Image (tube, rainbow, N blue to C red; front, top):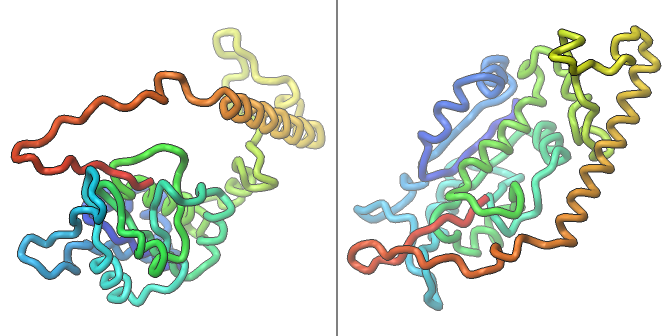
Length: 255
């Protein structure tokens, strides 16, 4: 069984998604156990504060290290302990396969401007991101990683073999396109080879289409990287309004 620990200041974020579809089916089949803990339970002041002003000044608030360390110690968690972070390496299908093959996975969800770097350096065993963008907090990223992982567990999917033909399963490429009935919809036709009944031809077509689409996708990403972001994206963002009382604006920097 895989035990998944999630440390967050919004445990209610996970209650709905973990109770439906494949995450719920994986738990019902005995393949996974979820433990979602409220980070605020590991604070020691009457306000249950998990953040403070950053050393060196600057906008936003930073999550303090103490509650994260105490939460992980309370769980008795072992590696991998993953901090959701925009600085992290991009999560991949290979990571999902690795996590699904393990016995425990702990996901740390940041919020506000940032998380104290000592959490990344001395508590987390790795940092992961969904991509080059910033979320309000680490919860959506943690849920995506959790979902990609538990769907690979026995009992999660009615046909686990279907996962073996997913995009990125082999050699990092995307899968061939899929079609179903009717064969002719508004004049849009299903490729003839898929209707032929010739399994060797179908397998060859799918392999060729996977290669073609992977190359096309890589070319688009390369062209986008060469061109850079749109010019207006490089401009400084508009000043955010200051809340009453002059408190610093709290923004998210975890994905």
